[in-house]
Image 1 (tube, one colour):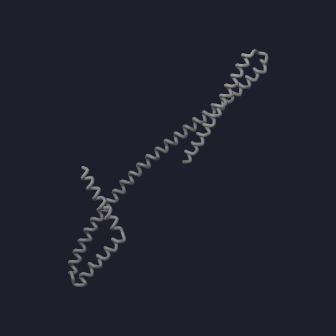
Image 2: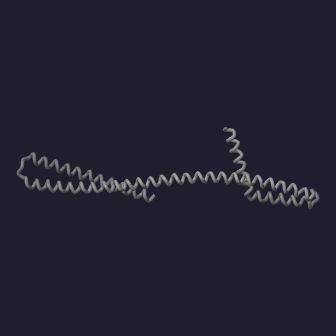
Length: 183
């Protein structure tokens, strides 16, 4: 099986080489010289005109038959390559569509997260206002109550820092999504 494949590959290389050579300037020159020589031989009385025409017609016919075969082989090979390229393009198009869908979903998720963060910020502000009101109303409370308030404030401050970090990450993701959309 491999020997047949190797033989086929060798024949294809030869066919490609011949097809290339026939379409080249050296081939044009050789053919022109061959035809000139063919018509000079009868003029110089080296060969009879009828025999020269018979041989020339036979040679040209055989050459035309083989050239047609070689050219068709090249066309078939080119057609196969074009079909492979079309399949690759279709696969790439499908991949691009999938990526675009993923980007849209990520964008929607980021928008939802941004809205959630805004709501959390509003809640934190409300809590801080409540804490400030409680602090103003309960200046006379004992030390434990003040400690609880300080802990609540530090938790709010910590949450603010975490929310700010989340906002920065969301902003970075939005930038990356825009870059992906441009690509």
